[in-house]
Image 1 (spheres, one colour):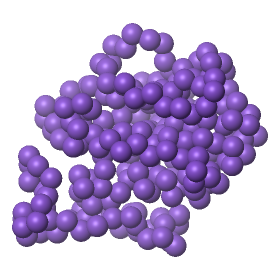
Image 2 (tube, rainbow, N blue to C red; image 1 turned 90 degrees about the vertical axis):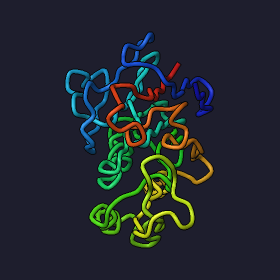
Image 3 (cartoon, helix red, strand yellow; image 1 turned 90 degrees about the horizontal axis):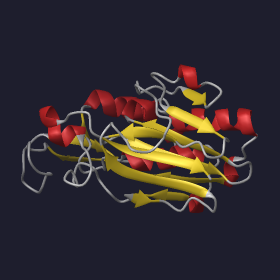
Length: 231
């Protein structure tokens, strides 16, 4: 279990457990790689296919499931509210982070400068290999127009290990998803010193975390559960 220190009076962690979890947490039954945000418990009947939850209800643990995608947990220290975000590459391209923070502003009067954020374990740049069509979607993002896409070109990955010098002749794009999410947080007004980026790569540490890409057909319905709660 990875415990995060988002602030006093906030419980936040990521843990590897099966779908049959042994603690209470509100999680969307299905995450559809959208930029949809719901407030719970007020909108709890409408969270299927949603990828971000927000709440200011104390004692209500909210969360998202990940298995390579980026989990982001937010704590608004000023107005006592929290958020859990599932940001796969599609949600990242849609800037689900900005959508979540905008909703927190509307619901809780959140000032982004008060937000503490953690980007949890996910697939990192050396393992996140994509085609030109995916790279172009990132290149078209308004939020990256000044910085460019945080990415690099690496030899084609084999089925069993990360690329090394001389492995493969075809170069592929590798996008740094956590870095893009950090840029999105900064663009939304979150302070750099308030953002923690976890170093764990789910693909590399597949024996400790669940990696849909690494496990391929062996991947079942196991997930990392990422939760946050106002105590």
